[in-house]
Length: 254
Image (cartoon, rainbow, N blue to C red; front, side, top):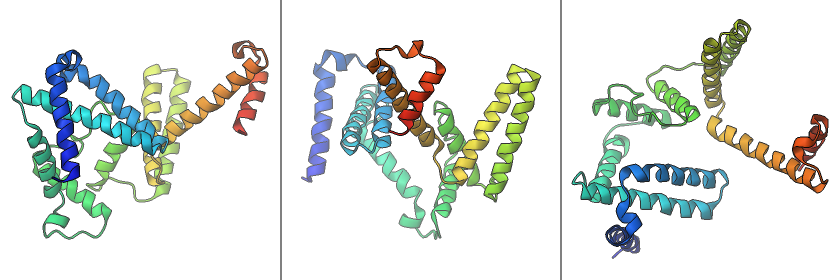
């Protein structure tokens, strides 16, 4: 047997044994697993952000275990078999890549994406946006919706046009702030964020990744400030803003 197939079957067997014999595993349902699956996915995302290849390998294993766990529960509930999960994704990939497994011709990546969305509509989807999960983080969701809208031609032509839209939305936000209308401020702030996500896409930046890197940068610098304050025998909260600014500027050079 192929070593990969053997390893996969061993993991399936272990999952079955745990489900049948372990008190904790026996108690789990799709509802109790949901939050843990989200956590494991974020741990994988962290490893990817940190370019931690050992971590990526480990977290992929955890995610794979969750896939097998759901498949096992699906079997117990007479909903589906693991074989159906595997066959389903294989068929989907073949059907949605007619330029590989059929006679469709494509010139570039954009042609592939357009064909993908057209095929999804033929499969019964009522909107190109229907495949965007409701529970996605807002920045990721905005990016995905914009990418999908692009596939049907709803897209700015020039990057400068997108930036003009950003400036327009910022102007409307300023007007809303002057009005002190909280609801309008929130609405216009959302428009600014959405337009910035669009601009990020046009200049080749993943906004979620960019913001997360800034979060990590802030965290590193702030923790440096805390450590330096402690080294000076002080509590950061008792220092003046001017004193904290000195430490912050030091942190930026590290």
